[in-house]
Image (cartoon, rainbow, N blue to C red):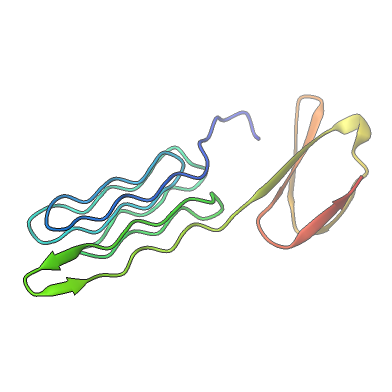
Length: 131
């Protein structure tokens, strides 16, 4: 998009029964929660926005605008109690158009940049492009 390489749509960390939480996947996945005998999972990195690490038993959220999964919540056995998983990250739509063919007609509020001979539109909300 901008000359930097990113991973997208990282998986959320797997939940833990009574041990260590799973880490979020590359591209912004959220880390999982963990029961008290282990540490929560770490956030997934190398996305345009990182996910969040698990916090206690609660799973971390996926990175914003990455399409990543949230981490699973832990489930403990003493007493049996579950915790919430983290929410998935919101999505993103990226269009790369040769600048010579770019119409300049879009709606919403895309981030518009150029890279070499291409124009790049990044939508993080509602919008459209007319070629």
